[in-house]
Image 1: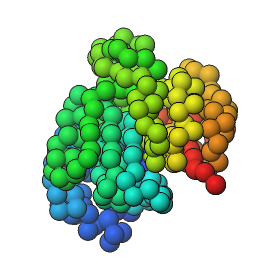
Image 2: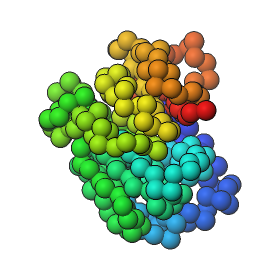
Image 3: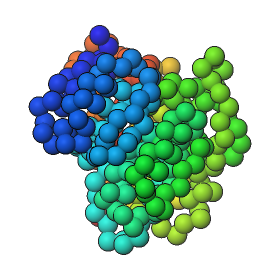
Length: 271
């Protein structure tokens, strides 16, 4: 059993022991999710509202992180915050943010067409206002780029032209951020493309109040966490680093999953 599958299996056991989670997902729907094969789509009742799910593993991991652990919880004095969700998947983070900040304006980017379709349906189901869903990747250039379709939370921009790849529209995030004088929250979870993106948007980070970044290190690529942290520090942030998927014995077996050897969440804030 892979490390990721083992983690999900253990988390599923916790769901049944946690009354707080049961009120959001019925036992019936939990059983439905666990019975599905990976990347099978379904519809469940979530917070008493219909929710489209494209992959059980992605949903469970994301739900526990976003709603149980509240990794995107912060406090701002801005009554009408601007929030940008890069790598929005089926929209769970956007739903969470709008529940916390009803007056927020949220722009959600998701390049995978199937997952984007699910996100649109979910935003409509929850009747969220001032949310713009864009079926685009964020990058360092405008145009159409290769995108490896994984079906869950690991699709990514890539030069690998395998049978799994499609062309997706990309937008230069730097140009998009320049439209705003201030951004309350910027979430970037783009499966490794942060290596190219962060240097390009480094100057724009100075207008961001809170930044969440998931850093992905792949075995066949050079590590660049130090460079990313330099840009974050130069933008005036302090930061906290948290393992997203801890390895019990880091010296034994480098790969975690999906050819990655390091996966960390970086929480960036200002004094």
